[in-house]
Every structure is written in structure tokens, then in C-alpha cells.
Image (cartoon, rainbow, N blue to C red):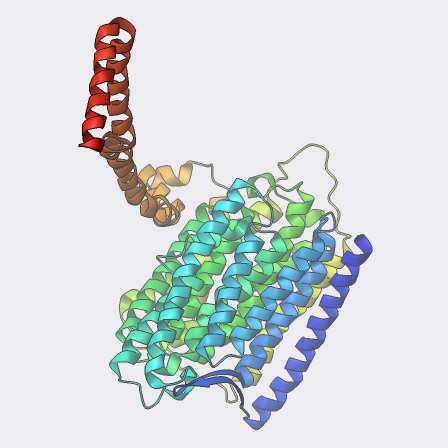
Length: 579
């Protein structure tokens, strides 16, 4: 069994790694020559509607496929060690491969039917991976994930129906000449809703932290770098259609609120994986908001750099959780940099890259985004929330570093932490290398000319100001007593509101189901167990029972009346039949 597990791990790793190399060479060739290749295979043609399988290969799809296959190959290699006690490792690897296949189908499709296949495949396999460890918490998280994503699936199905008006499902043909059509207005609204569900924007945010019930390699691949960015990628592809829409402004508002909300909630959270999930939510809000401002290339750039350091961050978290005897609470951790230096190195570099510290990969995309926001003519609220959210990112990152790396170890008196799992370390070092270099490498490739953004001195250094302020606050909060900050600043109600993601998990579970369940309980009580019982089953039973009791009294107590009734019935039958 173990031999088969090792074999499927290595085969999957090598296949995905070589697929990544092929994509890389094609990407370089395509972007240097400005190529874009469109394949179309007609499956069936019926009554002027043709069902075709089409593939679009350009620099964007090839580059995204390269990043997806690199992360998934590294995650499969990592899983060989992380899940070595798992008996059904083959099942896990096959699920991950099916996930990668669905993602590739989504990336290379300019056709809405094949996009739906990839999109639905992502949702279904994500559900299977979230409930992989079978317990009540996983089932609840999986159901919340699946039902939230179903809204997006329904929207894509409705878009397929509306696009039938144009005679083909290849949406890339209709961007220019159908831009102001009212049907395109409806389609764009539905596409934005679909992207919001998959990328967990407000009001669909609650499923992403819940999905952390999945194994850590799944979190590294699915819930940080690939599945959740599918919505952003879809909007990048539809960007030419959406750019002047009113809904895009609404999306800008909601995505900035998502970024702000997740930044605040991460500062209250003590679960290591949920903190990283909320930081993913924050970065998704950043991508969506810069996309809504009209910069799809910069959004795609940040999507790729974020995928690298966030997958690395989850892998480091997985190693730490393993070491800590499967405990995820950061209050038990501390001083880990003394015992596991290589894992701590990876964790710190990915954390600093998340903050946008200079010349790591996150810096190139994040700094560019914030400078473009400063350069733009949007209102003060957008500007303030952008910079506040950036400060909050540094805030929760430094709080996490203090809790995990620097404070005292709080778990037990006798412990043995080791840093010698070379399969995990090797896979982490690949992503560490990419977290250091992918920002500069991508900025040279994607932007063929240098951006010169000319801003006033203080506005240019605004990012540094909020980062320094956030790091100081993170340091101070990690050294405070548990109640002191709330006593100083906030009431209990307000702090619980901020802590619980603005009550969104409750609103999207109990909030939706309470009304319907309550109404159905009233219906059940009054109709099923009430009137319908009286007039159907129980009522007929009572009538028959009363009659039988009445005749029973005759039979048992008065033989003459019984005989008389018998003769009477006999006479009635005789008259009825013979006269």
C-alpha cells in the first residue's frame, strides 16, 4: 500500500512539474512574440446553435497554468510526508489532480460551457476535500462551502442562457460590439455575483475561514492560490465588458469592505489557519478592488505573487501544527524560531512578503496597487480604507510573528521539536525561492515598459508610514493582557462584532435558515399534525372506532336487539336485490 502511495505521489509530482516547465517555455515564446492561439472543435451543430469546445492560449492563461501546476506539484510532494499516515493517500492525490484538471479547464476556456464544467468541478472537488477528515465540523464547513459556491454556479448557468441570444457561447467575440446592449448589462451583473461567491467577497465571505477544516495541503493549494482566485480570473477575462458598469463600482465598495473586515477579524483570531485564511480574504479584496478600478494586469500580477507566498505560508503552518501535536491555537506556541529555524525562515519571509516589505515578491505588486490608488481620482473613503487595510495586514502579521516566533513556548514542559523533515522542507524551499524572486521576474515579463508613478513625497511614503504603525501596534497587542485592549478602546458588543467577521457566518447559516425552518415548524404543527390529522387519518379512525364501540355494546348487552338488527339488515338486502 505504501509503495503504491509513494509511486502515485512521485508520478503526479513529475507530471505536474514537467507540465509547469512546458507552460513556462510556451509563455516566454508567446509573450515575446505577442501570440494568442485559439482552437475550436465543433461537437454538435443544431438549429443555428453550435456546441463547440474551444481553447484560448495566450500569455495570461499559460502563465496562470504554470503557477497552478508549480504549486500543485509542490503540494503533492509535501503531502507525501504530511499525510504519510493516511491509508487512502491515493484518493487524496487523485482528488488534487482532478482539482488541477478543473482549474486548467477554467483557465484555458473562452467558452461558457467549458467554464461551467471547470467552475462546477472546482466547487464539487473543493467540497470533497473540505470534508476529507470526516467529522461534524468538516461536514458543516463543506456544506457551507458548497452552498455558497452553488449561487455562483447558478449565475453561470443563467449567463449561459442569456448568451444564447447571440448564437454562440464564445463570450470573447461579443465584448466590443455588444458592449452597451441591455442583455450584456444583465450578463455582467451575473458574472460579478458568480465571481463574488467564488472569491468570497462580502456577503459570501463566511465560507473561506470555515473551509480551513480541510487538510493543510488542501488549504495551501485550494483555499489560498487557485480556487479562490478563479473569480478574480473570470473578472479579468470579462474586464473589457465590465469596465464602465455601475456594478463594478458596487464591487469596488464591497471588496474594500471585505479587505477591511478580514484585516480586523484576523487581529482577533487565535486559530493559526484561520488567521492565514483571513489574510487570503484580505488579499482577494485587494485584487478585486484594483480590478474594479480598471487595472486587470496589476490584479493578475498580484494574484500570481500572492499565490506563491500564501501557499508557502500554509505549508509552514502545516509543519508547525504537526510539531505542536495537531494544536492550531497560537497562544500555545512561542519561541519556535529557536527550535525549527528553517521552517521559521520560510514563515517569516512569506509573512514579510505578505506585508509588502521591499524587494520581496509581494512588494512589487502591492506597492504598485497602492500607488495606482493614490494616483487615481477616487474619493477619500476608498483611499483611507485601502491604506487602513494595508496597515491592518502588517498589524496581524507582526502579531502572528510575535505569538509564534518570539513569545514563550506554552504547550508542555517536555517537548521535542525537530526541523528535519526534508520532503516538506524541499517543497517549501521551492516556494521560498519563488516568493523571493517571482515579483521581480513577473514585473519584467508582464509590464514591458517601466511604470513611473510620480507622487508627492509623503504620499509616496504613505505605505511605509502605515506599515511601521501596523508593526508597532502588532508588537504592542501581542504583549498586552487578554482584556486590556478591549477595556481601553471597545465595548464587549463591538469587539464581538469585529471578532465574528461582522456576524457574517451566523447570518449566512442561522440567519438564512431560521425563518424558513420556523415557518416550516408552524406548518408542520398546524397542518400536518393538526387539521390534516383531524380530517384525514386520525379523523376516519375515530369515526370507525366510535361506530365499532356502539355496535359492540349491542352485541355484548342485548341479544334481542342484535338479532332484530340482523333480521332488519337481511330484509333490507332482500328488498334491495329482489324487488
